[in-house]
Amino acid sequence: MTVFSGRTRIGLVPRLSGVGGPSSFNQKFSAGLASRGIEVTADLDDPALAAVLVNGGARRLDLLWRVRRQGIPLVQRLDGINWIHRRRFTSLRHFLRSEQNNWLLAFIRRRLATRIVYQSQFTRAWWQRLYGPISSPSSVVYNGVDLEMYHPSADQVSLPIWVDRDSQPAPEDAGATSHVRILVVEGRLRGGTELGLENAFRLAEALAATFPSELVVAGDVPARVRQSLAGRHPYVCLTWAGVVPREQIPSLDRSASLLYSAELNAPCPNSVIEALACGLPVAGYNTGSLPEIVRDGAGRLAEYGADPFSLDPPPIDGLAQAAQDLLANLETARKLARARAESAFSLDTMVDGYLEALLGI
Image 1 (tube, rainbow, N blue to C red):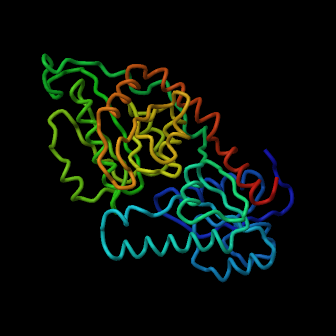
Image 2: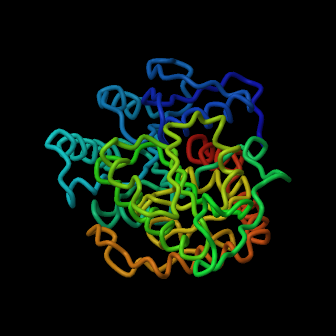
């Protein structure tokens, strides 16, 4: 790890706060730079700027243009493309905001950025397919996680006890019978992304045929969605955790049996990488970047069996089998999940990738 003794400043825009991947990245990246003696600023007029990283888009295109004209490296970090609004109408405001954001991202990518960092191979191929190739160089840098903060523990949940539904009572009468806890962690499940939550509940229903199931959902979920799932299955317990503070996510991950990755066509989901670091194996469909991330026994992915970009509902049988395979070998899957995080998703690895793009080191 390179540590800078001189005064080096990286511009990081836009300023972000709240839940979600971009704001989480800003915090982690800033901390990683600080540990190397590199300052971060949102002031693009700072004369000490060595390079600028645009985390997605920034509305002050005039400032970005001035940075470009000054010969300062201008790197754009690209997430996925807003697409659900084109398949499922939510509101006119949401549609227009999504289209505006896509235009802004595409303009910076083609006209202003001197280099692009994509969050995954899937993301790069997606942008090139919809908006065409560009002459600027690019690289892929996966999101990283603090492996000291996100780690397994010796007291993680035990293996579930498999039960025969023909002879076992309902969970509330089953005494000490264990249950499987399926965890979903998302910043927000609204604006058309609720389909992922529906798939998570269908998974819990399928597993409930074998043992009592609990679905724990951490994130901002509209009341109407919560009401639509309440009481739908007698053997599925629903727990709405709400928006969980970032520092509590590791203990939440360690309390679960497996993580279900609810986002369709995810560019590089932080929740999946954080789960792997905590030794929590991942179940999901093989859409988006998941085939790149959930490898080497760190989880199981099922064929979607339909067109995810059309929001067609997928069959649940393959996903349920994938989850059962994980649960049948849970201790091994936990070790492999942690090993995958250590090999590919450390915070240092992520910061190294961005420093190479920004400063050529």
